[in-house]
Image (cartoon, rainbow, N blue to C red; front, side):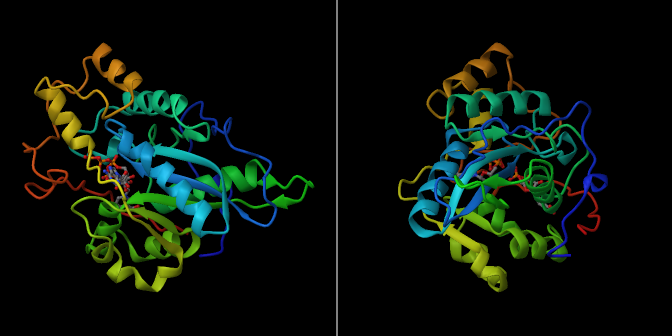
Length: 286
Ligand SMILES: Nc1ncnc2c1ncn2[C@@H]1O[C@H](COP(=O)(O)OP(=O)(O)OP(=O)(O)O)[C@@H](O)[C@H]1O
Ligand SMILES: O=C(O)c1ccc[n+]([C@@H]2O[C@H](COP(=O)([O-])O)[C@@H](O)[C@H]2O)c1
């Protein structure tokens, strides 16, 4: 299954879906490198500067320490069915991500594929990107017209990778698919140690790239939501267009049905109360 490529019938698409690729570089600058697309999966409720910063940190790392060339980056907001505390509707989360991506880097896009349908496991999401970019679009080319398949990789914070060592959260088959076939860039996150995050993932270590945070910044969506509920300013924690959107639509005024009560502790508030979503029963990733 590791080397198997999916076909159209393996995926369910939301109504009127088309894969966004307007900012995907179709011609590589350096033919000696491997083209790379970064995919960040998460709630993005709301998207913050830290989410955008993850892409910039990965870009520096990729340029300095790898043989990859980034041809595009995607935010992939999770489905409403994920039912995580504080998860605003996919409609608003996707809109906010689009506003943030459009005004930020020129290579960032938002794929609404998983947001507007049933919950899709991350292994399936990465397969979807691989399928859309390499099978449907036909990959990319060098300046000499040589075809290249694009490598898709997961971009995540160390807290997300830590959950991969927690029993019952990810299926082993999916982990092997995500880390064995695709690989990941892990951005250090305050309160979630890098070594601890990857200890039990050692067998895939060649596909796991660790990126240290040289400027500590522990903005989290949880804290932003809490600030908003308390009427505190969130300006300069997230793009101004997103702050304006939140104000215009009066978002995050209530805790919402899934929200536990949280405190402004260090980290994400996750130490005080479990915010882990009930993950729907995994189907096979093959
Ligand atoms: N401050 C941060 N440092 C490093 N990674 C981060 C940071 N904030 C978010 N991420 C990463 O971004 C991805 C998407 O995160 P997500 O949308 O869950 O944001 P969040 O701030 O963790 O949300 P919440 O507070 O609602 O749990 C995850 O891989 C997460 O680890
Ligand atoms: O695929 C899985 O089995 C799986 C298990 C746990 C989490 N995930 C994904 O990881 C992301 C977690 O986001 P968050 O906001 O809970 O940090 C979200 O995109 C989930 O779909 C995926």
